[in-house]
Amino acid sequence: MTIQDTLAEKVKEAVQHLHEVSLENVEFQATRKEFEGDVTVVVFPMLRQVKTNPVQLGENIGKYLEEHVEEVAGFNVVKGFLNIVLSDAYFLKFFNLMKDDKHYGSVATNEQSPKIMVEYSSPNTNKPLHLGHIRNNLLGYSVAEILKAAGNTVYKTQIINDRGIHICKSMLAWQKFGHGETPDSTGLKGDKLVGNYYVKFDKEYKTQIAELQKQGISEEQAKKEAPLLLEAQKMLQQWEAGDEEIVALWEKMNQWVYDGFEATYAALGVDFDKNYYESNTYLLGKEVVNDGLEKGVFYRKEDGSVWIDLTDEGLDEKIVLRADGTAVYMTQDIGTAIQRVEDYAINGMVYTVGNEQDYHFKVLFLILKKLGFEWANHLYHLSYGMVDLPSGKMKSREGTVVDADDLIEEMTKTAQEISEELGKLDGYTEEEKQKLYKTIGLGALKYYILKVDPKKRILFNPEESVDFQGNTGPFIQYTYARIRSILRKADFNHATDLTNYKLHEKERELVKILQQYPEIIQQAAEQHSPALIANYTYDLVKEFNSFYQNVSILGAEIDEEKIFRVQLSEAVANTIKSAFKLLGINVPERM
Image 1 (cartoon, rainbow, N blue to C red):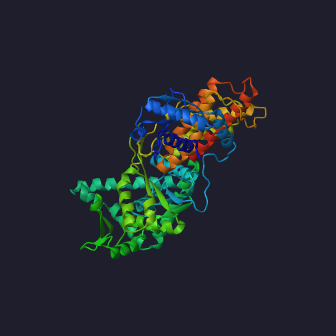
Image 2 (cartoon, rainbow, N blue to C red):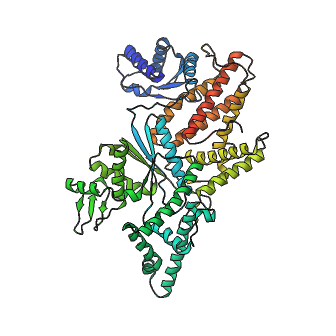
Image 3 (cartoon, rainbow, N blue to C red):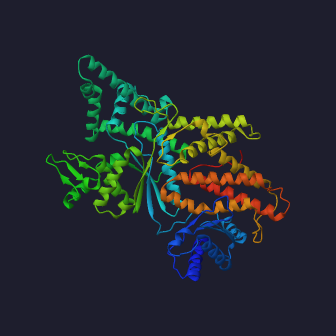
């Protein structure tokens, strides 16, 4: 039972005892900084049932709590707000339990835990990962870790878009202009090599369009009749027909890309439990559509195409099978969702996909509900805004995309430049320095992206993100390293539990923030928002720095103060490390 549960019970008891009125619920809020207190009871809502002065009612309840709840050390009433002061003994009891809990904040999973699949990344095999993929991967990975910490069994997955006309464009360009080059012969990562041919196709295709236009053909017609596009379309038909030579080329070039992706994922620190491939899933869902036709969920038009009418739900009509019987993306997504439930017996899914697909997922979730799948009530689209750079928008066809590998490298270099300017790395080996630069650079990138509400668009500024001051990853990492330095210097036994110790107001504030951590994890899981974890960590670090500047830790004159402050510093460091782990960020022991 939490202290709020105890207080709620006793407030109801007080009102019953004093006014013979049964309250249904009690409203709490955090006590405002300018008033003394740790938790505030909002008295106003009670006036609907208790006809009295709010200040008098607050005073009466406060006195009752002081007499009947041992954790209550005092109170004050400001207008209709009853501010309750909790005892040092209460905070010490909590602190002594949390400081020794290696998994503080997290809920252990068991066989009854909900099973959730989180999909993220889901790239195309015709180009490398870019800045947009970075936000997608960081969000998906972090939400998966947060859901796990909140007590769910989690499976991480991606669906790789490895088929279709865009894949054939890269294949055809390599076949025509590649002269047999490979990742080994060029020294290029496979995904970059294949991406270059996607850009090459677009360049040659535009040249052909321009030539056809010179012959008097309209631009629209030229786009359809350009020989290169016709060849790519033919290649797609050959792939679908299982042509051995085309399939072999497809497998070879896709493998180059997968090897490249793996290197980027490893550098970014994300992983997957299962990969799904569109080449295996694009035929899924067709049988489900036939079942849905029989149930009356779908209907067939005169041309033979199959649709669903969602106009009653404020949406439109949506095609699920073309007239020639081929599937559309929606069909595939229906089939893949069902397949995943069969594979993992999951209760819910989170799809990490940009906000341009908001409508698609509304329709998908609604169709699955109409088909009668109970788990469809537990599907969530983790919709996020685009990432812009100060230089503007990205376009992959034209090769103006910010490459993920290049950005990771740039972040490491920026971290190196700033660290060298600060000049605090005496005694580090070159290997230790490089590892630290990468930890700081990646921490800066991840934190800058994850501290923003997923739904908001981001303007990503690499230099700003590596600032060692303010709401940044490096500032939090630096505070962690500072605490580790304090702990290394604490050459005395500080393992004793203190039960009769008077808390300094700065100590009390820190303990109160530590107390919020389990609830923050649960809120972040419910809202699918790593931003809550990021900004909680920043608040904790700000409070620690205020504590550090206002009280002496190792120089404290009383032994008990020294012991408690070292314990408190260690608990803060452990919580920073735990929270940053949920964001996929490492913390350095020294900086």
